Length: 88
Image 1 (spheres, one colour):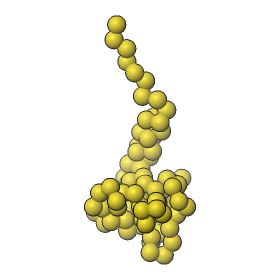
Image 2 (cartoon, helix red, strand yellow):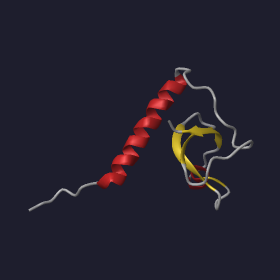
Image 3 (cartoon, helix red, strand yellow):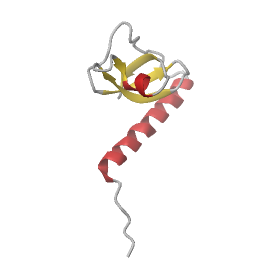
Image 4 (tube, one colour):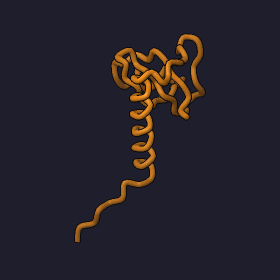
């Protein structure tokens, strides 16, 4: 018989974080959030999930990876992070 594999809690948490980021992105476009921390001024705690705003205007969840010298998204894509903030 065919079994459907459970995705596991990790995938559930990732989907929740992506949904939360999408909701915050929508609020950002509506002007609810305007305060972003400039990564040139201050970096978040290492490997802690934060919201990042890219130069394209896209908002995503990401983390600061000191071993890479920046945010993970900057090393996995050509994105440039222009701001970040703690996730609520």
